[in-house]
Image (tube, rainbow, N blue to C red; front, side, top):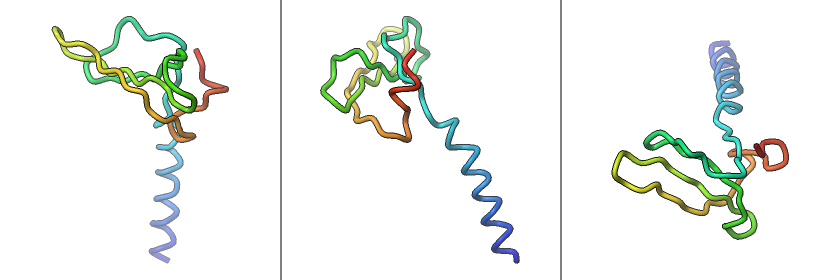
Length: 82
């Protein structure tokens, strides 16, 4: 009985966390980005199946930009392009 209640509680917690972990994909890079905040950008600069991940930096440093593979857990390309 104790195992059943804890596993159900665990599933409810995971169900609540999963949608919040998804990130939307933008069509252009944001002008303002807080330090260490990241944004996914689909602007065609990366190869097929990848998007540009832009990470904000502290004053005086440049933003980090890298092409990363996009997965279902990160975002949905069809529904989230802004």
